[in-house]
Length: 351
Image: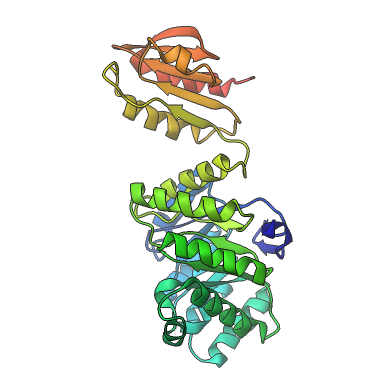
């Protein structure tokens, strides 16, 4: 697989590439200048399972805030830079574990060199990011439009801009909101480089459309052995990105551990707020590192049978519900005690 042969890159205390586990990344949507709000959000992301976090750095105040943010979090922090090379330098000086730039929009070669020299001094990686929406005019003309080949050529051109200054501590990301173009671009790029690849479908949309597009795109890419870190880009709470990324990796067999929640579709027999119950359970179990399956069923008639393949589950009825293990009813409880009882079982889980 391609990811087994990519170059190993250290990001803070994490290592990607060379067959290391695929890491989950997300990005804060707070103002980075607001240290308190940003730290609170990063802590929520950490709890959800985020392993690398990226923060926008649009101002010098944001760059300076990175130092204070870094002191209060435990996962690597990536600074997202556009246009102003001085922000990249300041972000590195204030503790960023990696910077994300497009060397093409940083400015002159002297400015690119200044950023590279600062990264080299601090030995932090540079993520070279190219999006289909920012493809250079000459490449659009060369390929008669925005194409996968053009995206890859642009990315490799940017990599060479950095390599010429004798620096190869690099990660590449090529993204598009066009799912199949993004897949094709990764298939074209992977055999042409040994740098680790950060994979995602950019501007994928809201919770529903974004999850569908990201799941399809990431599955097609990851299942070919391509990709060392991933982000599910959603318009919404970034915690949802992490939850989706974990599920994608687990579904593809690329990650073990973590509780899988299965729930039945609602039907005319449902006499409980199954949707709300399933969402509560999914949120509650995210804090457990158990490799088990939890079922949430809306019908006490068929619930035990449907939950047979799960390790543990609950089934709701009219004001009451059942706690089930391996298809066997172990307790009948009032509806408001179902989740606390399930949580208690998980805390004391012995298999």
